[in-house]
Image (cartoon, rainbow, N blue to C red):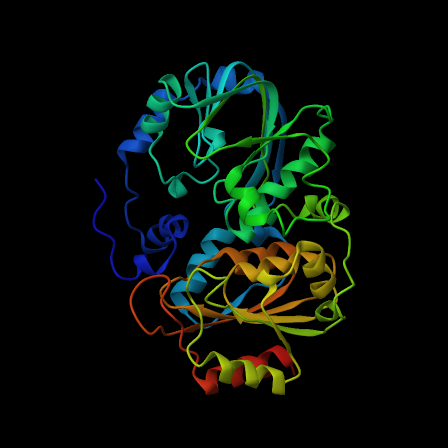
Length: 387
């Protein structure tokens, strides 16, 4: 059984907690759901027979790129641990009785769980046995002949949209999957990102099968695609599907951008004294903007010319991919209650410079407001400007 996590472990997201425990030399927990996944899983033979693509990619720390600079030694150690993890991607073509569960899109092939359908086991909100019971029971189902699964584990989040979901469209095309094969998306994705995706090719290049909340999708053929973590090699194909929208004044070229987190468009981690912080960055020559209010074509047009992006560590830094292949410096205020390793690791893969400052919060919980002391803000601005 898992021992109760200590205070430091709780400062990290769930997927980073295993890395934290490895850094500290603590035993990794064995959960009942992990045992269930193994017991209900498909056999290795079936998995290998269904695989149509596999590619190994170097761990981030093997790349000749700059290491992230983070002022908290514990977080820096966990980032290094994540950067040492090898990356891989794969694709499968399953035939038979295929079921795609609602929520986290777990897949069952002939009533056996497909482990690769759960990109991050630690992120599963619902145990596999509950999905197993639902998919063999009388829960609402939608039946189709064949499909490509492009859904992701946390598709509601903008980072996971760009990092997990959109690369699947590029993979499907590159692997030669017939364009007439429809793509399974969720109602949640369309409601969360539909307007944002307006003008791109993602929602039009294939017919869409919309999976409603609580509904299982059943099909006879299913293409399951799993991009690598930080799939920078798919970024050019993703960008090809995103036209540049230069019609709005906010997307005029800017070299320095401060991304503001607004309460109406963010899940917590907004800044105390946000107006004062905005003013400090404006005085340093930064455009202050909430990118959540823009479409993806508008965000591409805005961020593709940025040389510095700063803000509270969060999904807005996903827009760094629009600088792929060109220099970029990211400056992050990192909540002491949510020390996510995502964007420092992303920066290592893409060859960006990353400078992080861990800052206190106004309360408990991962969504607590962050407190950025003025001297910390000035120090980060000076570091971003460089020597």
